[in-house]
Length: 344
Image (cartoon, rainbow, N blue to C red; front, side, top):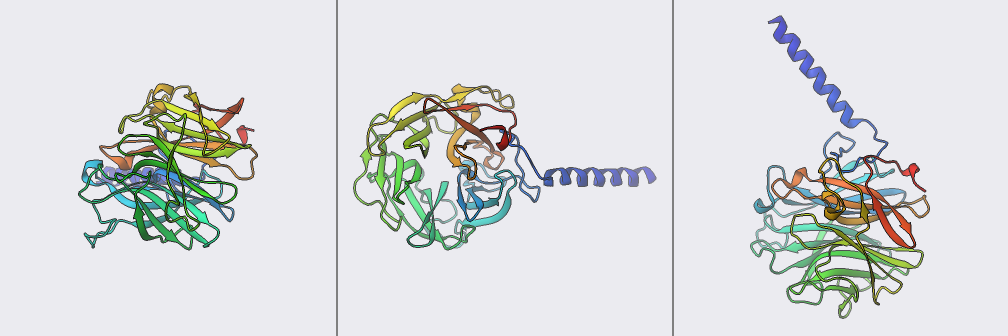
């Protein structure tokens, strides 16, 4: 009996210590390793993006449901986390949930809700969330862009409407919402069904496309998972090829005119992810989702990638790596661990 009690006490102590380890303040990015929030729980924000508002970063991503595969409708809505340093993230909860009660809702449980991105509209003083939306029972044939709004960066968001992106009745796939210096917002996306990469300007409310989409000349067809930034007057596009849930080589492009011709610069990734044993030809086992402009550090950008696990999406991990620029071209080199102050 004494041995049993002693064993139980040791087990409880081990669990307590392990739990405290997860809650320790983190000081390094550790790409492809499990990432815990400040409560010690794995971060659940897949395919997402990050905004900065009033000295705080907000990370929005797909909330994946425990025990579900992608075929079992693992999408539960948009999950939000907040941080001051981009490493330690506080759980702000699910800020837009799928609708479990109304089967006729556009975001009824069973819909596919992917790759959320949030933009702040200064005109309306409103946060606008966008996401790929495939209606319940429709599958991947016809896609919409879902739109939700909130007065606060940490929600709650209210579903507002949907639209067909890309100028096609079949909609569009992976997309980036790029807000230019003058406040104009653009929707860059792969169009269905021909997979051309196109761009369209949004209206001043950021609710609907304003006019026709046009093909982005120089950007390869089948370019998915786009992320766009503007650096020193040059627009940079990071994306991937199209291979379902399986990783492929990243691709990058630049232009001096967002509505003009783009120049291809090939794969910007270098090095090997030793955890998943994949190199640049598979983008370290990941796929691009967003590029963060780090505030307070001149010319500092972070590339966000997701490692997809369609059989159990909640176990998908994240790869965040610094972007370096050489001759105005991006370079993303694998690091087992790194800190913001390590890079100029």
